[in-house]
Image (tube, rainbow, N blue to C red; front, top):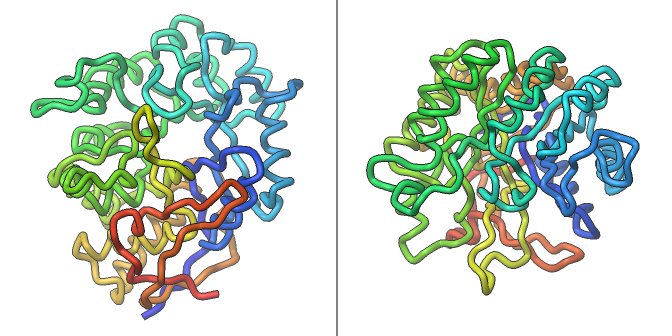
Length: 361
């Protein structure tokens, strides 16, 4: 069995910085990526649009110099901080450099120490400027500063709190603001996106289609530790239903692939799953585990919409004419050797030495 697909955009990926960036970019290109939305939680964060040593323009040039000139599209969101102003949004959008901004919950994930509470950007006029300029808001949708039982409890969790309490308030204030609910993990978030207007969409990672929290805590498979955390079976089922629906226009691929040469550290576990080079294969596995027969043309179309079409449409990108081919043949999984040391792909960290799909060269 084989599937020929248009090259796709990974609309949430961490390319990091430094010598290993070239290796991470090669892994993206190897899996048919035509372009990327590269996360701005670098050190220091990408908190300026241009005219600065470390800005969207500067980081884009760094990506291109490391092999990213092979991409047809590179979007670097502006990292929102308390120093972000409406004027930065207006000027960046008018100059064609600023296409998206990233909201992180303060201290809520890797590199989020520079973030400010959501209310900051409401009060400062930043969200209003984004709405007027058509700049996309990329949201890490979790409430911050919660106690342990509220952060991940039986009745609720940080993501559910955000989509129950904050998102309805946000879209009521800014009904025309384009928002991507990134790497959603819960039924609550999936249902919210389904019921929202057409300017609200969501990305889903491979790991959240494939695993539940039980897979992580059984023997503590820390290579599955990411933020937001994988959740429960009902949540995974809701994400599978959303991604595989024949009417899906709102849910799309964004891997959140996050390479770490060291996952387990003295101060805890680094958050992020590395799926560079193998994400389409893992998405295909997730679609099959959701019950779709990818020999069927309708199932292949659903997969194509999720991987290649919906995200491009939301961000206003052209679907590439270039294609790549996936085949139902086992692929061996080995660590990615980088300039900074080996990075363990997620399946290998889960004890799997092969995956059921490959990309044909």
